[in-house]
Length: 423
Ligand code: ADP
Ligand code: ASP
Ligand code: MG
Image 1: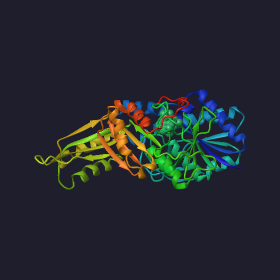
Image 2: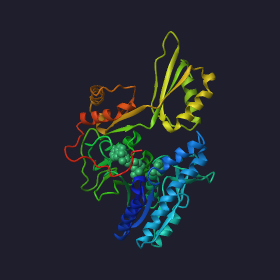
Image 3: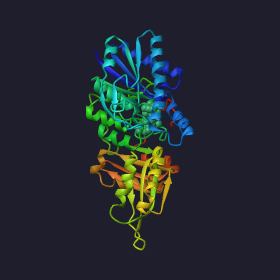
Image 4: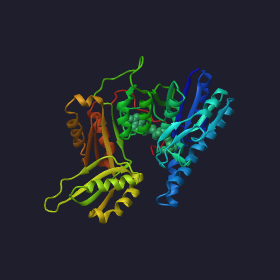
């Protein structure tokens, strides 16, 4: 008997109807002879609503308590889903992350999975049950406190369970038909990709294509778990993410895999930093000690007359307050002039392994942005990615212009978005 792990995102279980529809899909997989573990996210925008609520009682909520609060969202959907499955005449049991054996480190709000001990899930499956697991949560090995895996973390739960249970496949069900060459909410002419390598998917995910979480793809690559991303609203085959294409998976030998955008970041500029050894180290040590992950960094050449320089970096908006608080504390010791915080930025990235061997991609990318009248504020590159920061207002137009310029527009149907609010 084969074992499948399926993950259903928030938009797939947004309301009672959605939960019943998902229950039917799960039962169908069971009827087809599979053992099924279903990982489920919080209903609709519940997680965002809980965060808003927390911020109304405390501007920087305590990490431990925020995790306690947020994990409640997934508990609601897992219990309702198990009830809906039982109502269809099948046995199901729901499990919290901790009960499912998802063991993490103790970094609240973005814990890493360090071990998975799915003994209770195995026993439940052996008894003939469908196992429903709350995504996005675990328990810290050291503190025994409840943790969450960072926004979108249910994807990681699913892949980690698939690896630990030696599942045949991990299916990620969402509100679009797979991974597209750009976000179908922004580019109606985006094309569905039949197969994409872990490598390209990692860059897309890291650049903001939230259809799959970056850490989930990292995990899948490490344990070589093929992922099938597909819609829970249609019966269409989706996108396979794996090392190598299998059988009839269609591989387009395109230079560019896709365009990603991200409006979840902000830019911090430390103005007037004395240009001497150790200052950048001092600044980024303070940010690191506040457990903040940063993305792009730019330092300007100092003006000769002043001996001062500006350092800018980008980081998740959600960590903006923590970062500026940490930097305020070292203002006197570093001796910088002021801090600027800008959350009206967007990052646009072009991704594709073919970039390595095709000169001119960068020039064409910049030309497309310039033709669309979009100004570039920061630039960063990797071997298979170019990213720029622009004004947030320009993001949709910029993504569409780049998508068209690289010949990615489909000439057939418009990409369908079945649900979700895009939040
Ligand atoms: P879920 O609630 O199922 O986890 P998410 O909202 O996290 O869903 O991810 C699905 C969304 O990802 C889609 O609705 C789409 O707007 C967005 N998205 C961004 N980039 C892409 C892409 N390249 N392909 C498909 N979807 C994308
Ligand atoms: N509910 C969590 C979130 O909104 C986890 C997830 O959906 O994957 O981030
Ligand atoms: Mg998601």
